[in-house]
Amino acid sequence: MKTVIHYYDFWLDSEEARTQYQKLTDELKAKGLVLFECVSKDYEYMQKIKALDGKEVELDLSFLFDNQWNTTPVEGISSIGLRIHDWYERIVPNHKRKDGYWIEISDEMKALRADTFRCGYCAAKYHRPKFEWCDSCISDRYLKQDNLSSLYLLPLSIRDREAREIRRKQTVPKTLVDAYISANTEMLRKYSEDRHHSRLADIQAKMRAIDVEYEIYKTLIESKVLTETQIDIDNIIYYSHSQQVCFGWRDKLSDEKRKALLVRLDEIGFTTKYVVTFK
Ligand SMILES: [Zn+2]
Image 1 (tube, rainbow, N blue to C red):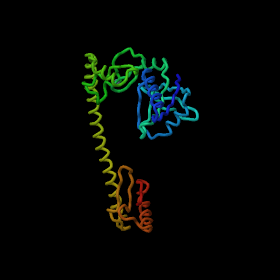
Image 2 (cartoon, rainbow, N blue to C red):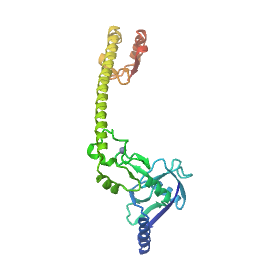
Image 3 (cartoon, protein in one colour):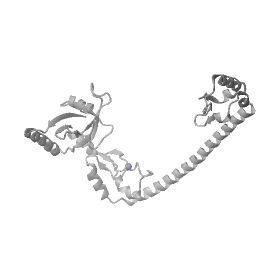
Image 4 (cartoon, rainbow, N blue to C red):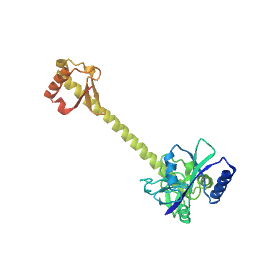
């Protein structure tokens, strides 16, 4: 599916320019286009659009929106494709300047939006669904019962504000409410079960780290390595997250001390068991 981009750049400093701009915006509104205005410093983006003025681009239909489209890669312009809006204007400091573009919305593009239904809660999309209500998000942890009407599916051709109004007026069927209550109860049960397990796992991990730390200090003390090399016990730290024993973390060890320490640590097999680092 293809569209054509039309770039425009008006300076509204003459009556003629103002008339021309007014004429264009009236035409675009008559076509049903809705302006998307954006404060953007991405000057390059508009340069790319300008280079594509009057040219055809291929649309990437893998993800659809109600007011914009993705294109496939455009040779010489973008290797990943562009995001193009139905009608876009960059908000620039000089309000007399109107720098924007619009794209041709073909009947095929319109039909695609009309046939693609979206959930107002999770934005899941369905092509010509055989059901009226979304069934992707019913177990969502943040979905509240008061918000169930937002699951009503509406085509992308209906814009956000209108869609919100339509959904607000929907009566949520009892079957959906029942399904929600059941899914929500199960989700909360599962969620708290997972948290209980992870709490125990966290404590266990801390216990394991304490055991390792105890073994490290016990080995260093009982082997008399610290006494022999005259290293203060407070100058050693065990980082449980990286499982490293760091010597000299408060006061850097001299090269001599470090060498002597390493010899002794090797002798007692400490270095094969633990990762030793120096500050
Ligand atoms: Zn949904």
